[in-house]
Image: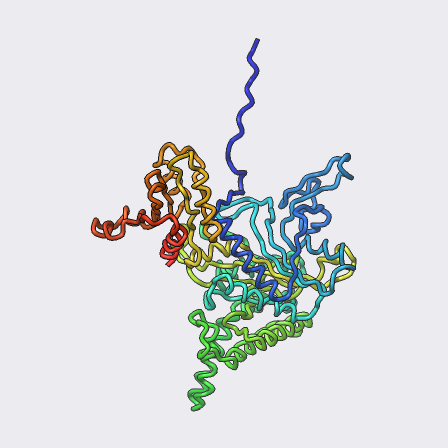
Length: 544
């Protein structure tokens, strides 16, 4: 008789596209969420925690319409016994659930409803380097206001949030565009085919990667990519593509116009005017750093005015295009009144987000400092947040359009940016470890750790097998503990404890000379009553 096969043991590995987060990462994320929530709360937004699971019907048209609607999301179908056989899915963002919440509870909520939400979201997409199927988002939205003041407020709050978590002014910019201006450009181009319009918008979105020349090739016959493969273009004529090229290359166009006008002013002896125009160019240049002396509101107003004039020329007679420009102008007037200049928030027609989602202003927060990629090449860190106006989302439930605007911050990318800037240590210190020299005196060691904790110091007693003292120090090393406390029988009899500075000890072992080691041995004998004071002194020295 054959022996029954053993059930194979499961593999101890995370599912593809997911990862585990350990102590320091969780602590850092918690602290960042606390800081972001503080900014949102200061702006008057209220917290909301909605379900992580929604019906596929509630998540809406942004999912593929297939027999098993799980492409892009993690979905499952309830059995007939559980319900009506409805399809359920993990939320893929925090905005779709907000639309359902507002539609369901609108009679009980104030209008406008201002809420913020934080938590994990899940997307059933192909994972890659730094791209996971579960990640954290921080959202803030205003539902029920058509005022451009709501959009301006979101931009200002995003700026304050980035600075609040430690991104200095000059290392980020919030870029703002308007989907209506894009639609005006498409009208000017004479495009009526929806597929062709969508192809043009996708091409505009590649501007940061391929530049103006690459966009021109992709709008025309096509181009060779980095691998040598040929990518078919949209097939526009030069006359058709001219408006979109002038649209995305607005920065250089406006800079050249200001430079030419400044030169003319100098030639005519109007040095004050020339300086003002040069200041307008400088105020939005990559070299600009926030400085109360250099900040020139008049110069920044000139810049924004010239961008608006440029956009007007491009949209021609398009009514929707002019409406978008007027909305942008109002946003920036409101931002200017609050002191937010183009050094922090500026117009950028190359921003294209959520083509089937956003209906008006769109914005994106980009970090402008350079990092090295996996091949050692310099590149900008890139986008960490984005959002915009979406006036049609709630209408799916109510049949009535509800104007809404919001922003979403990618927490993991923002944390990575702070590590790149050295604002967050990759490894944080663990707890003070009270070692166990005599297992029969566990009460003494627990009393020590209680004193440390009551003084606000993170501490623990070693709870493993105390037989081998070396293993206790190895444990403290794995915990990245800053201090170890030692009290053997002799120390107990003499009323003293030994306190070992583990951070200094590691530094001494790695690089110190014998003389330096003798001068600062990293281990101190103090009276038992001075335990807390000495530990606090050592921790303060390590922090300094």
